[in-house]
Length: 279
Ligand code: GLP
Image (cartoon, rainbow, N blue to C red; front, side, top):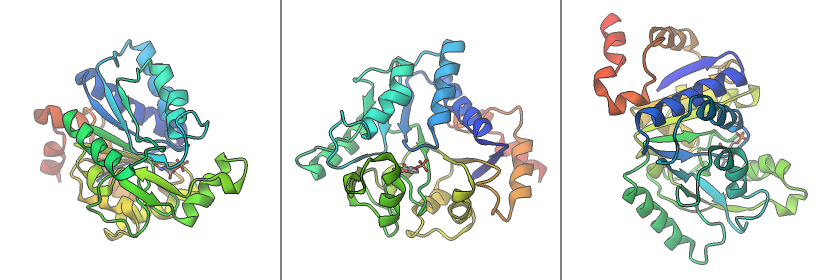
C-alpha cells in the first residue's frame, strides 16, 4: 500500500484529483470506479476544475459506482445517483450512457447485481477504483463480517453506518437499512485502488486499514492484498499511523515521478524499481 499524507483536506483532494486527471489524460477510455460520501466531494470539485482548465476530455470514460441505497428511487435527493449528478457528472458533462450505478429499486436485486458484475467485465474491468472508508472500517457498503471474496450483492447496513448516514436524512426512520454494493472481491479486481480519508474521526480505522491485520471486521484492510492501493489522507486521519515517517520517506522519493496507477499502463515508468534499488 502506498501511503500519502497531505497537509489538509484540500491538499488531499487536489492530489487525488490529479491522479485521476493524469490517468484519463493517458488513457482517455479509462474505466473509473466511483465513490460517494462527504470525503470525495473536494476531489470531485478539483477534478471538474482541472478538466475545465486543462481541457481534459472525459467523453470516452466509463464509470461504475460502488453502491446504492436499497429502496431509494434514483430521483430521491439522497440517492447516490443524485449525489453523483450533483457533485460530478453534471460538472464533467458525463452522459447516462457513460455512467453506471446499481438501482436501489431493482425488483430482483440478485439478478441486477450479477448483471452489474457482467457490465464491469464487458467494459474491460475497472482501471481505478476510488474509495472512502466508513466509520466502522468498511469500503463501499461491505460491513464488518462481509466476505473478503464477496461479489456485488444486497446487504444489511451496520447500525453505526445507519447512525452515521442519518445526518443526510430529515428523520431517522427514513435512513435506508439495506444497500446494493460491490463486494470486496469485486473491488480487489480493479487494476488500482485510491482510498481517501480525512479528519480525526477516521484516524482509528485508517490505522487499522493500513497497519492492522487483514480482517473481515475492517473490510478496508483487504486493500493490503492489492498490489496497487494508494491511500491518501490528511494529517488528522494519519495521526495514529505507527510508521508515518517511513511512509513520508517513500512518498518523498516518489516526488516528480508519475503517479503510480499510470505505471499499470506504462510499466517502464514504475518508480518502485528505483526506490527499492535505493533502499
Ligand atoms: C458510506 C459509503 C462509503 C463511504 C462512507 C464514508 O458508507 N457507502 O462508500 O466511504 O459512507 O463516508 P464519508 O466520506 O461521508 O465519511
